[in-house]
Length: 335
Image (tube, rainbow, N blue to C red; front, side, top):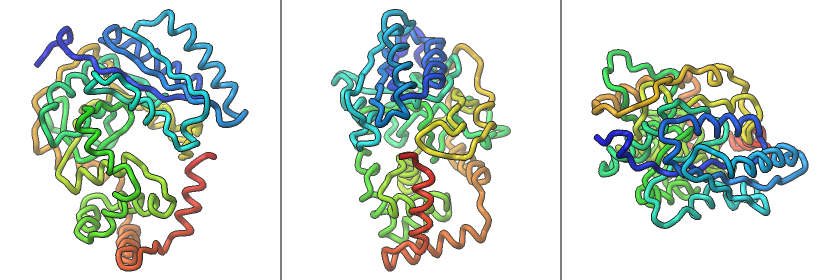
């Protein structure tokens, strides 16, 4: 295993728009990470779609103008959009990934409301190095779900069918091969085969609920599709046993509206400066999946309703809760 001096440091991409306080905390906590001085950071500053977003956007733009000339990164590169990419469907982050230099073969993505452990960069880059040649490992996730404790598990990393987008490393070639799963046709494919439905139902019924929401509303939740793909194809992602990410976005300020949840914003994260991935126990894949299921456990009644919805959709291509899904979609996303 390479030490911190020999690691290849992948660039970090952060999309943002108007949440000034969140973004500043995010960038400055990243700047304090071990290896920040070897890391190129790309910030994709989207253009405000309305006056509601303008004040925060102006503050971030002014902050970045100063930060570009004085920061602790190897390079800080800012993409300033002249029109809005997120709400228009162009994709602020998607475009930033496509615009990365051709020579880059791995990268790290983060939302603008994350706070990082000091060893976040070492952890992700070490994981990207160690699992690069493992065709079944698709991502290196920096966040660990609060309900996953893995008591008795003696390594500092584990493998899981789950996935979290809150600070995650990818290999460019592996990611490019998966582009098709982030499209609505892949959701249709999953629901067209009963063996897919049944496998997901046995492992993660909540995924089916979200896939139906995707189909009803024509919007794809990328994390849902990647987790579904991993369960259906026996793939996995790497996770740290102690989270390297604290997500500060559960305060009602993001583009998705969820209930305010202080447990995420007060989550204990790793405080160590350095990190080297231990060898992982492959048995952790099933153990971690069980703990995640317990964390997201639904009542048996809700699970039966999901199965009935899936059966009806499988035979008729109609979701019996279509109008409820449309209402939920309207509540989940700010326009």
